[in-house]
Image (cartoon, rainbow, N blue to C red; front, side, top):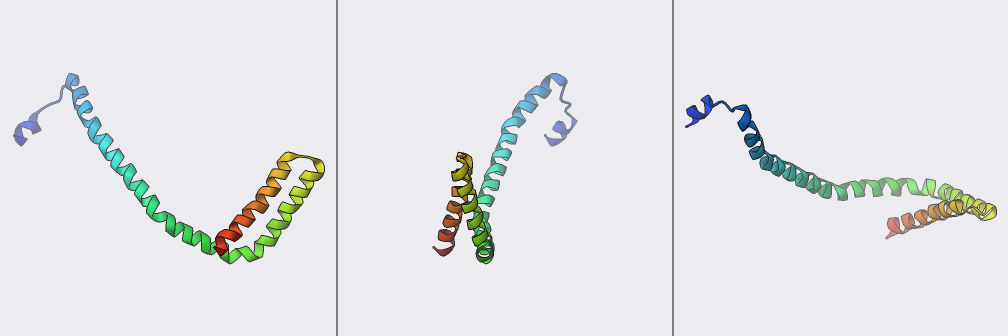
Length: 106
């Protein structure tokens, strides 16, 4: 049978049928590859989170006062000039700093 199939020539009118038969197999390979990528990312997240936490814990004491003062300055500037966007940015910086402190010491 293999020798017979090796001598077969796919005519132009049959090429569409062959391509149609290959699409489900290609789709399956793509779904399996996507699942493998998702599993890899889910397994890598704890490692990445641990490295990020270690980096932030090491550098937080140096940069936290600067971030707090910058956030406070932006917040006060927004309150004085009555620009709501500056209020939101300043409060967001201070809020992110507070969340980082809680996350680091939890």
